[in-house]
Amino acid sequence: MKKLSLLLLIISLFLGWGCSSSPEGGVTEQSIESAEGDKVLLRLKPKVGDSQKTMMSMDMTSGGQQPISMNMVMAMDLKVTGINESIYDYEIKYNSIQMDMDAGGMEMSYDSNNQEQTGMGQVMHDQMKSLLEKPMTMKMTDRGKVYDFEIPGLKGNQQLDLGAISIPMPEDPVGVGDSWSGERPIEGAGTMKMTMTVSKITVDDITIATKGTIEGTGGELAGDFTGEYKLARSNGFTKDGTVNINLSAQGQPIQMRINFKSL
Image (cartoon, rainbow, N blue to C red; front, side, top):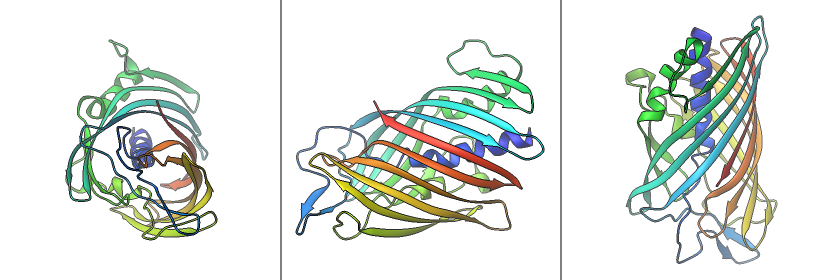
């Protein structure tokens, strides 16, 4: 049970990759604007009421004495509920979760759409219940800085700053080959250090490569990641992306591949 709770926490931690985008909606001006010298200024400019449906999948393997393999698919809705100058209020609602897991020969399948749950499926449903019943909320600036992220069911010292892993946008215009970096604390877990590099610019999209490290405090969580994601120039939201993550949590090596795509 302790290991299951740990894996669920790690899953929640990296949901922020999919939440760093701006929801799709009508925009009267380009969010990612052209600048001099074939450079662009990256910003998010959603409107109140804009929404986006996102499908997120994760494949995970864990080594050690008790190997675990897991595949998970989540469907979620993101919505902009308010704005104060350049700070946006977001609501994130998970609609469905499907998972297949093999934990040391013990196999389990879970589908949140099933009316009745039994055995380990019921245990998983109890763990996921708060995510499915109550939306998460966060505040994010037009440069992708998240400073308030609340997940139902985590209170007090359990409430990690999960939104801190959103991808920050640079202060100045950037072109192909330009890089910028960011460092974010993950409360109770350590520090995330990121480097982003523009790899391609088209009329419609901006492709950005990412890499970085996760430095834990006292060995609770540590690892590194690489990935790539594509932003729509019309509004700055993430059209699709993939992140590969290597972690060590409580001495257990974990590899994850996360893919998210707007629908």
